[in-house]
Length: 452
Ligand code: GDP
Ligand code: MG
Image (cartoon, rainbow, N blue to C red):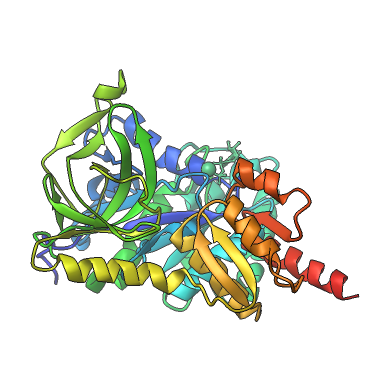
């Protein structure tokens, strides 16, 4: 019954999961196979994201009869930078991603980051599907390039199918332990009650048509109201990465999730200190003609409309913060917007100044996740900040007398060289890891040991 899809933006999809379970390979495959199939216009490469157009998805899933049933223009997959936790992907509304794909190696099963992904999705109430990846590694598997899952499954020997089914039900069991009912996607009748699991191979492309189709179905069902947006309103986005570019200085790669951003717009950018007020000097998209030289790497555009991944070149971006908000402003509302951007950051960066451990994380989103998990464990926090571990942190924390509070926990951060020097012989305990659960477990083990 919906025919007016002009103001429905592309849903933003995030791929999450344990390291090496296949996130990058899956995105490469989604990109590559469309390019290989020569589907002109099927894929648009963004900065930090890949857009798959609706026609291409429908074509690939062999469901062309359903073409008019879909109301979204396509799907925008975020290419989460490898060194960043997916947790950095926030927006003003909560989670930046409208939908998520949790990828699990079917041969390895659940791992710490799988569980962490599920916790975050639960907290943000983000609809998601699970893919059981690497089915081609099941012993005796006969690959059928890019086939739908059921087609390839039915062509496997009985032994292979049984093997897959057994591994599959272990994932169902693990999901149940995490508080989710799940079923193979083709047996799910109510995606609100049951999580759909799609067996795939990111290498052979088997099951990927099914994945794209299920994502469209979810978008259709759950997101319609979220995807209405004001295309002509002021631009609003989340910083994925702060990056130095040759000839441009410091730039920010953002996902614009609402409105339109124009060259010359005044923007407010979240930073470690006061929000930055600056002017968009250039909006840059990847140059489809290839990356011959730095100057030709990007294509300069006048304006961009959500949802899209774009690079912003502007003065004074050095202190911009990954995971923070970028908002277009005008002279009438700039003060309010600066205040709002500041408040968002203050909400996450705590400084109780009393007792507890000290936290450092790479982005606002990952800091928020870390704070959340520690609070669940009733671990008191003295201070929580974004940034690498600095000399100042070492000095501050080692000055704390209570040994249980002279603790520095770093999530996805480096220790700066002078901090390393200072830490030698300093009176404090430092934990560093890129998995929240490991940090918490290590900390708890250490506390237990120390108390004995
Ligand atoms: P990420 O850390 O989650 O991004 O994982 P990657 O995409 O880098 O994959 C880790 C390794 O698993 C790489 O060597 C991939 O080639 C391999 N891999 C990923 N997906 C598949 C799959 O479906 N089948 C097979 N056989 N290997 C895969
Ligand atoms: Mg990767």
